[in-house]
Amino acid sequence: MELLNRQKKVLVLDKDNRIASVVDEMMWYGDWDVSVTYDPNAVLDMAKTYHPDLIILDYFLLDNDCEVICRDFKNDAGLHDVPLIVVTAYKTKKAKADCFKCDALFIKPLDMEVLASRMDYLMAS
Image (tube, helix red, strand yellow):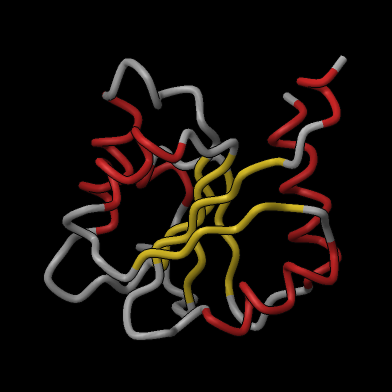
């Protein structure tokens, strides 16, 4: 029963504090243990040690391609089942969930109730 009641872990990759406000608001909408990293090159290794229940990625990663990072997670045997959410400010056709193989794509500004609900749903699946 302890596994069902434990606090869910959320790993956030945020480049240049672009989604810091999302992280702050997340604390109001759920009982999650949130860990933030600002290093796209270290996020995969961090996930392997942190064992998140959900990962949120900032779409705009400058040097790194968000699609590559998503693919790395989905190709990793230990992390491929961890749900991925991509957050973006871009409203272009390029920003599509199927392009990234992510489980959800949210465009800013975010409706935190919708995001929190989707997070709960993905972690329960």
